[in-house]
Amino acid sequence: MEDLIASYAAAIDEDRLEDWPNLFVERGKYVIATKDDFDRGLPFGVIYADSRAMLIDRVTALRQANIYEPHGYRHIVGPIRVVASGDGIADARSNFMVVRIMRDGATMLFATGEYRDRIDTASEPFRFVERLVVTDSHKFDTLLALPL
Amino acid sequence: MEDLIASYAAAIDEDRLEDWPNLFVERGKYVIATKDDFDRGLPFGVIYADSRAMLIDRVTALRQANIYEPHGYRHIVGPIRVVASGDGIADARSNFMVVRIMRDGATMLFATGEYRDRIDTASEPFRFVERLVVTDSHKFDTLLALPL
Amino acid sequence: MEDLIASYAAAIDEDRLEDWPNLFVERGKYVIATKDDFDRGLPFGVIYADSRAMLIDRVTALRQANIYEPHGYRHIVGPIRVVASGDGIADARSNFMVVRIMRDGATMLFATGEYRDRIDTASEPFRFVERLVVTDSHKFDTLLALPL
Image (tube, rainbow over all chains, first blue to last red; front, side):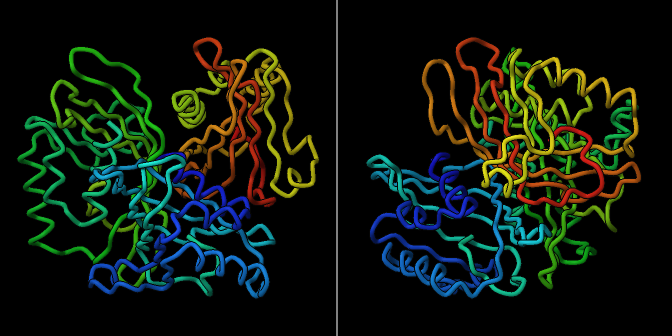
């Protein structure tokens, strides 16, 4: 699981976005929601995808449109807690911090929060059945382009 | 141990403060000291508690008084080093970084430092016999309310 | 490997610089390069050393010259990915974030990036055959004194 979670961060941080959807099962779910919305049970969040195909579309859009100001991320993820497991699925939690690096070298703390993952551990490589990204802040500086 | 350390961070970050004292043994010690004071051998620190009951009191005070400006934390903890172990006690070290999130969404790097833990590994669940939080900076922006 | 990587951070963060060269094999390589330079295949970086003796020299210089404004670091390292292993060598990757703490207590996010390590796992203690520190930003505030 540590490897999956680290690979996810690396795919984004190393600008290998094309590798990112493949870390999800075909019907995998990817949601970014603020903590406030998550606590209030609002399910859809800022970004919502419920299939690998939607994630691939998102990557294509990011590559083609290229509307966003050039920047990169650096993810730092803390220790992983497995809160439940069974039937080939593990529920895991980890804290994350994302730093954004602009083209000119300016670096800022961009987002913090919790990954709430459901991971398919029945076969290798492990994949996300669901990754819910709960962000602490509702303030996202300008646009939320790259996946968190 | 990773699970204990991650659970500690989660209890605070998810505002489940009531779960926090239970991560310590009954005579558990919890100290926050600045690195300068720690290096000079000053033992009492900014916050000092030497029993679970004192931690429970602290949570009660935080809940009732409610004097602090609403905010939350996000802990990111690095890899854990076990520097000694024996007699059912492990001495562990880890680096931490705490980000503070204010109600309006403003996010700031609040504190960094080292956890110096003595962990009871004789029975499950593992618990802290001692958690000494050594903070790098002596500057704590305004008040130090939530546990680090 | 987690222990080696955590010990590296601790040696620097606890100002035990003399312990730092010993985490490398005798012909160990230590390079700091910006991501831009690394991506363009420029091999020498901001700092380049290819033996433990050079690292010892660097520590001596730092201790004697004492030219730098007093400051300390705090490293936070994320999960470790082993991307290849064999012949007693493991190739590992991890993300890092370094916070700098000035003497007056001011704290700032100083550097982020990726550790690209080749680790000698043939004998204990494990040591770095190569540690390539790839920094996200090319902006280093003032001087780059302590090792990253």
